[in-house]
Each structure stands twice: as structure tokens, then as C-alpha cells.
Image 1 (tube, rainbow, N blue to C red):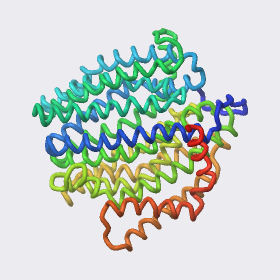
Image 2 (image 1 turned 30 degrees about the horizontal axis):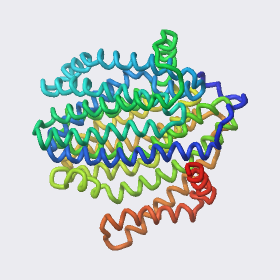
Image 3 (image 1 turned 135 degrees about the vertical axis):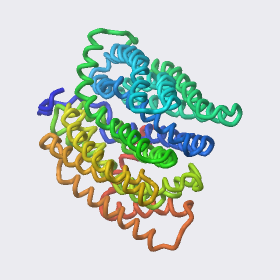
Image 4 (image 1 turned 180 degrees about the vertical axis):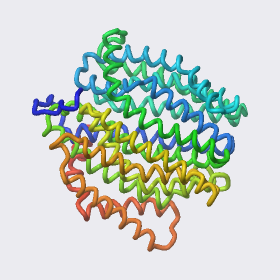
Amino acid sequence: MPPHAVSAAPAAPAETPSSVTLARNALYLLVGQAATMVLGMVFNGVVGRKVGVESYGLYFLVNSFASFALVLVDWGQQYFGIREVAREPQRGGELLGTSLLMRGAGAFLIALPTGLTAWALGYDRRTILFSVAFLGISIPLFVAQNFGMVFRGRDRMDLDASVSVANRAAGLAFVLVALFALHLGLGGVLAAQGLAGLVALALALQLHRQVATGRLHFSRAAARQLLSGGTAIVAITIAVYVQPYIDAVLLSKMVPQEALGWYGAAKSIMGQLLAPAMILGTAAFPRLSRASRDTRAFHGEFALAQRPMLWLGGLASVGTWLFADVAIHVMFGHRQYGPAGIILQVFGLGLFLTFVDILIGTALTAVGRATAFAVAKIASLVLAVGLELLLIPYFQARSGNGGIGVTVASVLSEGVIFAGGLLLMPKGTLGLDVFVDGGRALVSALGTFLVLHWLPPLTPWVGIPLCIAVFTALSAAVGLVRRRDLTVVRALVQRRA
């Protein structure tokens, strides 16, 4: 959809109030993400402790290679498909069936270029083989995740969450067998993830029967539409995923293997910390897409997701700063991975702005301005890479931990994305309330930090719940959390009952 598509056309009627649908979708995704987060933390902790910091650095590197390659294969189909299914549910079978075939074939074909790229970058044979192997074992899950196109487009976030939880649970079970019973090492980790992907794919096929969007079938017209429509979205997707790829390459070339492992450990937790923002963005995206042709309705949908996102961002930021070392110690152990704590702590400083940028990016994708937003992301990427070339060797020389330089560069460059996103938001859809609520969230975060800083040292079992309680109380005091928010939750519970 072109950028000028936001107009005064009437929005499609909704079956349930926006606030309840958003809350229900977010609840399903939150429960699913909570489960996958716990399982993922245990998975990464087990792998990191068992294979050692250097092998975990290799695991992080090849994971980055595969993730970027699969983003190229997807070509924006996932978000485009969600948007189209949300608008025209009867086309779900055609769009999903076509996308499944395109995804599977594309993932298979990109394996060789991935290996050749690793070879051209000068990596050793083991890294090249693992890069290709990791991509191959990722195909089942990659295909299974595509069912989210229909699940999310039809507001069935519960089905999408079920697939993710099943994959994580199976992956943890298989990796425990591979590492402790069969003693297979890093190769066993990859095999376990491949088997878990097959479990997720089988479940996705089964759950798809609950969503009436027509039979799965391939269509050349749909293929052309997915490619052309996805092109408008792929720019921002590539811009997002190319940065972790470049970060991994630069680190692997400029720091020792153990420093790469420290950053990989911190990065695995960073992904979990960003999950709440992705959950809320995913929950809001179908409704933002439906309202994208009506300026007033779109403003309402954006405002509905705005305060929860700011609240989550403020809490995640102050919590990460206060308890980064605890997270590293619990998951990976302080003896091998202690330096990862400062990397994660610095990441917490920029977490609030990252949450806001995720919501703005989701909104711009819904109105068809993803390509323009990608320009801001690319500008941010250029700045980040330039800073990394200076900061990685600086921090490596000063502290022996070059990963700090990557995180500092990322935090500093996030402001470029925020400024670009604000300029691109359609006129009349973004009010001053986003800045007011943002200020409230920052005040609550600062107050929470000061309270916990002034208190004597507390165990994490007391400190973390206290952090959440203090932040929530301050949020209510400054008006970020309001009584009507509780009304939405109560309506959701009554509806589910």
C-alpha cells in the first residue's frame, strides 16, 4: 500500500472492542512468550555451560548467518501476508499455501550462497560447515513459523504461541539428550533444533484446521503479489537483521573467540528482553492494518498500544540495568561468562527507546511506509558500524571486552531510528501524548532506580519483584497506568470466562 493510503475512508467494523482484542492477543502472546522465554533461557544456559564459551561464540556466529539468510528468503512475505489475511480472510489458504512453497524452496537454495559467503569472509572449514548445517536444520521451523501469517491475521495468537512453545519445549528435551546422554557437542545442538522444528511444523499443520481460511494451494498470482507486496516491507526487515549479522562478523574478526562468546550470551538475553515489545507490536499489527485507511481510527489504535509499550519499555530498561549480572549468572554462570553482564547492562540504557521504535515501525509497516522507515534504519546502521569500528578495538584494548563497543554503538544509533520514525508517521496519527507518556515512563524508571539504589543489597528473589512493584506504583502515581487499563483487563477476563 502506498504511503498516501491513510485517508478518511471508513474502517472495517470489528467484532470486539479494540482494547479487548488487543489485550486478548497480547495475553496469548505474553503467555506463549513467557513459556518460550523460560525454555529458551534454560536451553541457552545449558548449551553455553556445556559447550564452553568459545564454542558458544561459534554457535552465535552461525546463528547470525542463518537468521540473516532466512530474512532474505522470507522477503517480507510474513508481515505482508498477515496484513492481507487481516483484510481478506478468505484468501488465507491461497496466500499461505503459496508462501509455504516459496519459503521452503528458497531456504534450500540459499544454503550454498551462505556457505560461499562464509568462505569469502575467510572463516575456517568448521565455521563454513556449521553455517550451512544450521541453515538446513532451521528450515522446518522456518516453514512452521509461516503459519503465523494466518494465525495472526485471524487474531488467533493462541495458535501461534502454541507452535512457538512446542518448538522450544521439544528443542530443550532433544538438546538435553544430545548433550548429556549422547555427548554429541555442538553438532548435537544443531540436530536437536532440527528435530524440534519438525515437531513445530507438525503441530502447525494440525492447528491450521481450526482457522477457516480455505484450503492450502499454490497460486502464481499470489506468488507475484507476495513478492511485490513483500518488497515494500523487506527493506525494513533486512535493515533490522543485517545489523546483528554485521555485528557478529566484525566481532569475530576483531576480538578473541571468548569475547565473541560473551557477546553471544548477552545477545541471547537481549532477544528475550525485546520479546514484550514484539508481542505488543504483533498483537496490535492486525488492527493497525485494518484501521490504516482511516486517520482517526488509526490514531486510536496506535494510542491504545502506546502506553503499554512505554510502560514495558521503562520497566525493561531499569530492570536490565539493575539485574543484568544476575541474569548472566543464573543462565550461563559467572566464571566463564561474567564479562557479559556489563554488555547486557549497557543494552538496558537503550532498551526504552528500542521499545518505542518497535511500535512506530509496526505502525509504519501497517500503513505501507516500511520502505521509508528502512531508510532511517539504514542511516542508523551506517552510524552504528562506523562507531563499532572505533569502539570495538577501544573497549577490547581497555577492558578485554570488545562486545561493549557494539552495544554502545547500538544504543547511540537508536536515536536516528526514533527521529526518522516520528517524521514518517502520517499526519494526525501521532499526538503529544506519546511524549508526555514517555516522560512519565522515564520518571518512573528513574524513581525505581533511586529507590533500589538507596536500599541495602537485596537478593534477586526480593529485588526483582520489588523493582516491578515500585515501578508499577510510580507509573500509577504519575498517570502512566490508569483505572481504565484495569477495566480492559477485567473485560478480557470476563470474556474468556
